[in-house]
Length: 566
Image 1 (cartoon, helix red, strand yellow):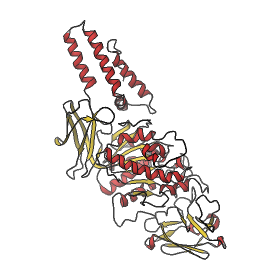
Image 2 (cartoon, helix red, strand yellow):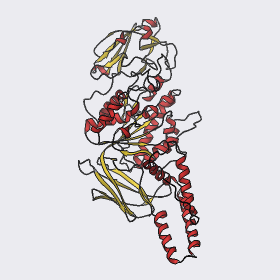
Image 3 (cartoon, one colour):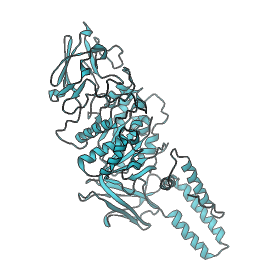
Image 4 (tube, helix red, strand yellow):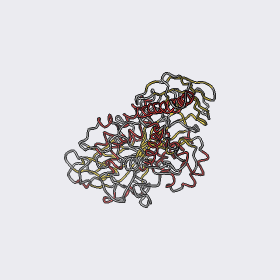
């Protein structure tokens, strides 16, 4: 696309194009097609400060008057009408609204919003030609004018629909719009891990034709020191195929695919993630204030501002999260930060979307997977514990309506992307989706979690651990019979409380087990008391799907735990 010719009379037009060209050139990911360039230009246009545009428009008028004073009244009127239409008449949809998109179904309704230059104007919203609601253009918090409408799907017809927004300034149309459940997929590199890197990518691309009602949207990397109002998509809403899935999040896609298989209605997936990022970047200043830190924050809230706030007005069903590797050095702080971020996201998504997004929307996450092939007991295991707010399982008191996929038993030491990026995303997504069915969709009588201890009986030289009040049968792998050096159960032998940071834990073997319990031999403590017990407290505690304890009925691994007897 050639830039417009420079005008000697209307220099501000030249200045605007220069601003857009510089902004697009500065992007981390350069547009490669005409469609991507168009989307980039629109996104950059909406981010130019309104006062700057107004100053340029005023300048244009002055230049026009000066020029046409020599050319006659007719030409003056013609230019002013043209300028008024091009530079001042704005009626647009937000960048997250496009053909093939999914709007959230349900009685709460779904938000559709955009920008306008005409304050007080009425905007009419229609589905397939039938008006469903109307709203007016008002001031927004970013210094401009916006319109915001709530659309409720009144039938069980999930689509497709043609959605139109009509005002005195024109009509906007979206085609092939569906209603279903919309999920946000966020985090760092393991959420960003693309479909092209999984083991059976070719088969997944071919299978995507069976899931055409699962729609994908991928956002570009964007840090900001201030809150941004709108998105800059890399992949606008799209139907799944090899081209649109190649760089799309594997966990996000496979999670949505599993939900689609379960329910049959459309699923919308919004990917917003950046590799190597800390939770502080994804947290608002309000969330960070809830967990004071002595450490100087360098990029705090930058991704919240650039990649989350533009999404807040959109109605969503829930979110999934895969992050934590970059925070392993401060697990205690993370135990506060993660619940605080979840709570803050819920509050702000709900408020900005006129409460069409639930103030307690379901939030799922992946507990950190295995990493290096070593026996380190610091970093990863402590962060896994903190991901549950140090409860060991979710949902819990500090993390209501949350769900989790355990991934510590899925090492990929030969991954070409490095140990920290295992390729086994199918297992991760399957476990996460199963957990979502139990928590987010309230499927009853669904055993969606691995076994978790419910009681401990500490006798002389033995410790009995019962799982799930005896209600969930367990299965022990061959690794459960390992003794001392390789055992996954460890005890702390002290006469007082044993902190997580204690260095001298002792491995103890399983000597017997029941349907829902194991008994450990604690002779290693001698005359000292068993002060605490922990399980799978290693960066990579076992070989692939070979940790000691699994659920017999669902093959899900027991998560790591720590229990103190003081």
